[in-house]
Amino acid sequence: MKVRPYLCLRAHLHAAHRERLSRVQEAFKFNLIETSLCLTIATIVNITMLILAAAQFYPERVVSMEQGADLLQRTLGSSARMLFAIAMLCAGQSSSLTGYVLARFHLR
Image (tube, rainbow, N blue to C red; front, side, top):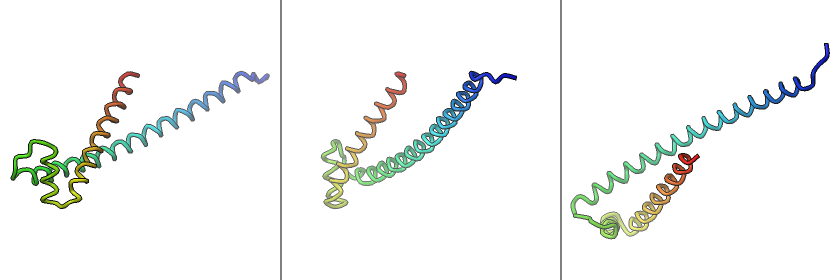
């Protein structure tokens, strides 16, 4: 019986395709785990920020970010104003990146 070289090549390519497919599936699995973990942590941080903001801002009527930063500085100390600014910057960057990634995903 004569061995046909194209059959060996076809079997090799099929095995390589299966291996690549399993790697892609593994990458998707880890991506799902990482995304779920990051979103869970972000949700916990956001809930904590909302609870703290509600507790601090309730006694006085706060209508602007500057008033909120001043109130935090008076009640929690001088570093609270800077931490509030960093938190707002991070929230903006996070929402911008999420919007960009979502748009890229939907446009594919």
